[in-house]
Image (cartoon, rainbow, N blue to C red; front, side, top):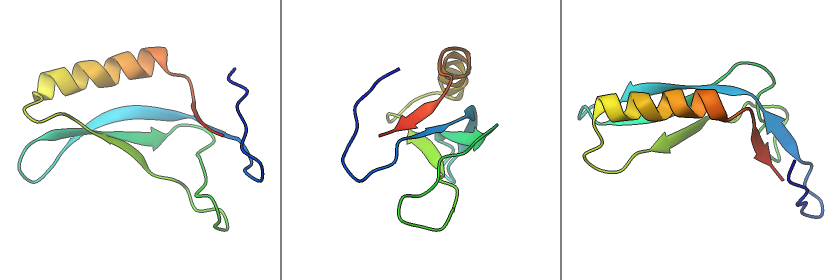
Length: 81
């Protein structure tokens, strides 16, 4: 586990599953949906942090799905520190 730490910031670990969504123009993007303990927005009273990735222009839907599968297979937690 990475041990970086900023003074005054509580480290967090969140569990997410990655899915593909489409923008109104049809371009895909990735959304992290909490599957366990979600990340909390720093400085609030417990709001869940929404996590996503904007993909490069012209990324095809099948490529986005392949990226999501890889992330679901290889990433166990998102870590904020």
